[in-house]
Length: 379
Image (cartoon, rainbow, N blue to C red; front, side):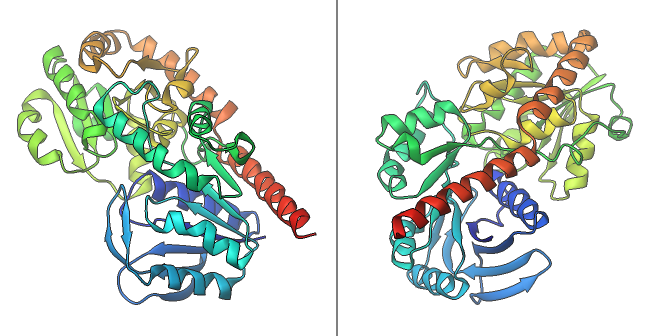
């Protein structure tokens, strides 16, 4: 099968990881993949080890959204005409092109599948989650014109159905992790950092990630010199937070880590992984930590609560995260057997529900279903 994948390769975010992992896995299963993404410089077509690659022009691109140039839609249509794929899969980049895709693919008579990533708090408990809810309201009428839309959880599906998307056009396919690559193993990072206990946050340093709530709880808890908090990632809030939460509090700022092997090494060294987000979709970083047998604490934002429910981790309410962590951080410091047990349960949960192999099999089944439906309509 030839899939034209429209997604992101930069800047680094969950969408980038999603696109890389899925397309590489599809290639390994002998599918042909053409990867279309926004990049600076001359637009064009090139072939590489990972298949065909086509660049589209843009004005602005961030971890959250993309603004294409006026000619981007023409470049996209021309590229799809030349490629003539069996199917287009758009890993939606919060771009105006997302709204034009159904019309373009309908004109070219190509089936269109989307993955809808925007994070949310299903209980609409704060201003940021309300803003995300508006994103769902904006997209719902256009998603109705896609042949199928992939979401990560029942909560996300139910929200889109309430907004008017036909349930039959929504497929729940959770994110998946390569559990051979992300697995327990040896790491000497704790020795390098001179600590006995390592707590890790990995992600963007942004408002919706609620990192300051974790930092405040850590500072208040006075965890001692044998425990350190590692902040892995970058973002616009780092400059304002780092001066107040530093080495004197046993907080280490690693910044953005590009090398996947290094990120795996960090997770293998971690005792506890903490994700205090106000809004989420389904965090790939959380699944990666779980696959590495790390005890996980996360809020019930997005689908993360579903991932950790029934004993696979500790689920926090998005309200009062600092207060909840003030109780939990010393508990995990003083009771290592709790972290060990939760780490085992976390990996088992991933093996049961969230492997990349399972994800790709479900995706292949969806592709076949959409292609069959399209063929029947042509008749």
